[in-house]
Structures are given as structure tokens and as C-alpha cells.
Length: 289
Image (cartoon, rainbow, N blue to C red; front, side, top):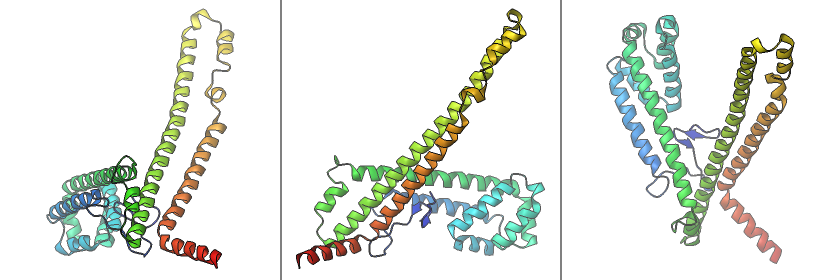
């Protein structure tokens, strides 16, 4: 769920109109609190397991390391450990430069590579599941709180807000929820369309191959010229227009980029609601003077 704007483990940071980072709570994306607890337990369990093989100072470095740095190093190490005997130098450099581990400890660690590799694989799988679950639950929260059938939706909360600051905060939350849902919907539709194009291309290749095999199978009843005549137009290149397919893919990419730009503008708007309100008020009073 790393985002192309500013991000943390579970997605993009959400900033209100006063420059404050919106935080998860029992009333605002509580699923992220649950995900955070799951991730903390996973990290604790993983660190306790690593203590069997890594020196204490290296563990301290793990704990203070930025999550994205640890994730990157863990991924690099996980890939190298798939074929450790041919990547000993690479593994040692990751230990030394990334984790600050000397050659003596690194040698001990390498001797326990199977156990460490298994632990890292389990960590990455559980980490990915936590992020995926949080993303799904976050979108469900957005849908629920934008649903007009839900009496406690964000629209109604804005109407009954007791102060200007509360109203601005709720409007900010509403914009973020709408942007998240729109992004997810666009991502899904573009992905599904790309998959449809790829599937159609693969199906035509299969059908062409099967049809040509059938014609060859009837060779005993047809002359060579008759077989060639039947197969003249029976080629993938004749039945599939690669130019149109590439144009479709390019259009999908452009659409996705355009909508991403719109989402970014909406996020910037959410961060400037107070400024927009003040400018609107100034324009109104200016027109009356």
C-alpha cells in the first residue's frame, strides 16, 4: 500500500487543512489500529526469532530502522537467500552495509541460513497479508461512511457538526474517503480491462494453433494446396490487430495517469479547505462592498 505521495506502511499520510496528520481512531479508520497492532506483534515475534542468530547491536539497528528501509533490505536478503551459496558476497554486503554485522557474526548467520530464510519468508507473507487486509477494510470503512443509507455517514455528520473546525475536519475526511474509493475503483477497472485484452490475445493464439492442428490432422483427405488455402488467413497476425491492442493499453495508461492527477488535486484541495473557505468568504464580501 505504499503511495506515490507521502506514505507509511498502510498508505498515504492524510493531512488536514491545518497541516496536521490525520490519525486513526475508534471513529476514523479504526481498522488501521487493528492492522498496526498486528504488525507490531509480527515485528516483535520476528525480532525475538532473529535474536537467536543476530548480535544484540544488529537487533537494535533493526528496531530503530525506518520501516521502508528494513522492508527493502529484508526483500533483498530474501531474494539472495533463495540461492545462498551463489550469493554469499551479496549476502555478506547486505549484512555489513545494511545491518552493520561483522564477518564473524555474518559467518554464523550464513550457517543458519535455512532457518533465517524460512523466518524472513514467513515475515514477508504475513506483512503482505496485514497490508492487504488493512487496504480492504479501509475501503469498506470509506464505503460505509459515504453510504447515504447509513444515518451516521459523513454527509450527515457535516450537517450536524457543532463547530467550524469540526465541519472542516469532516469535509477533509469525506474528500479523502471519496478519493480512496475512486482510486481503488479505477485501479480495479483498468486492471480488469488489461487482463481482458491479455486473455483475448492468449485465447486467439490457442484457437489458431488448435485450428491449424485440426487442418493438418485432415491431411489424408486434403491435398497440400487445399490445406495451405484453408490456412492462408488462419494466423494470429491476421486475426489479432496488435496495433489496436497497444493503442488500447496506452489509452488505459493515459486514463489512469489522468485520474491519478485528478486524485492528487483532490488531496491538495482537502489540505486547503480553510484557505478555500476564507477566499470564498472574501469574494462574497468583496462583491457586496
